[in-house]
Image 1 (cartoon, rainbow, N blue to C red):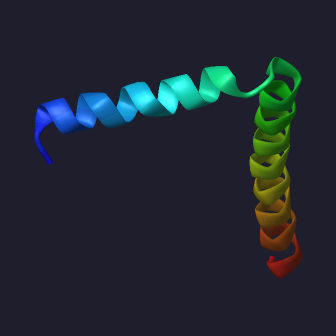
Image 2: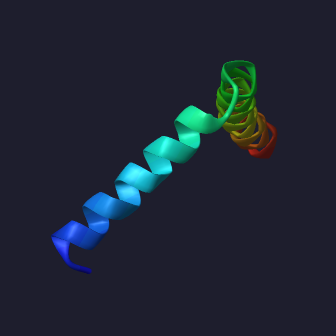
Amino acid sequence: MKKSNKDHLLWNMLKLWISIPRNIRVAFLWAFILGISYLGWVKLIHRFIQH
């Protein structure tokens, strides 16, 4: 992929992100963070159960 195409893609993604209402962006970010932390806790609990 050429640099100009990559820059164009990044710019389009940024424009798309900006076009999404702010509260939906915040909700998506929180869901993402909570999902990752939940997966981390599940892994930790499984590790403790196995020992």
